[in-house]
Image (cartoon, rainbow over all chains, first blue to last red; front, top):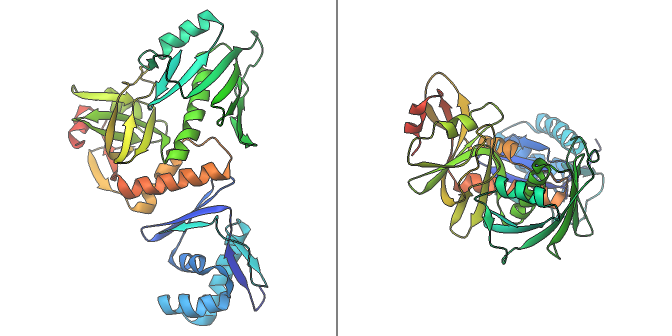
Length: 106
Length: 259
């Protein structure tokens, strides 16, 4: 994964925080995912314009008291998996597409 | 004839008098006067020997019109015109499937859903008992004591109204082989069924409840808008209606837990 990595929520999902878990459903085929707390933080912060390393430093490390290098490695793995399922979009450039359809409710 | 399920009257027109009579018998209790239908379907019966088999249900939307089909039926429905046509073999199961699909699509727009659950009304409040095949849906309906009205033993109809969620009776029967009562009541709770060696009720975490509910909701359409609506409906439901695990021994005492 490149040094500058931008992540954005796909427009083809519906998502909602239920209790402590982020639930995500892929709209095209109804596949359901549940994210753990760390992945939920990354998902919520995935606005397409904040680099992943900034998300990790300012959100993940602060909230979970994890070393940056370890957290970044784990975050990259999470992002890779979610992107593989179509939940997140990943780019080396800021992602400016509208995210209006990724309904994230809490 | 007009079949009204969940407060939604649908007119079915067929030239085949024998088929119409069969439908009248099958949907007795859900027939209403013919003046207030909100949707009209022409039902055209295919020649004997054609439109056979089952296969997977396919439900798609194109240019605002729904197309739904399986081996034994093909239906097209234009919601804007509130009209459609069903071509099917001469059996009531095909029509039953079309009605289920149409209701799931309409309910999705309104925050409701059809769910694999039996349901019953006790003291003016409705209870849902959800689970996969064999979990005990029909057993709960069969064990219902006097004073409890069974709405269905197989497919429950949940609508969202201004003042909360309601369960409606349906003609979608399971192994009980008996239509539900055509009535509605405000929903008091949903129980996720598990058969066990003792009767007990346990709380369910929100995420787990959502997952379990979504697994049991009927959603035939491969359509992003509908899937989103169903997802939101399930999450809203979990936030507003108590959901609990019900482990039970299949005898009448289980109903002592339901209140």
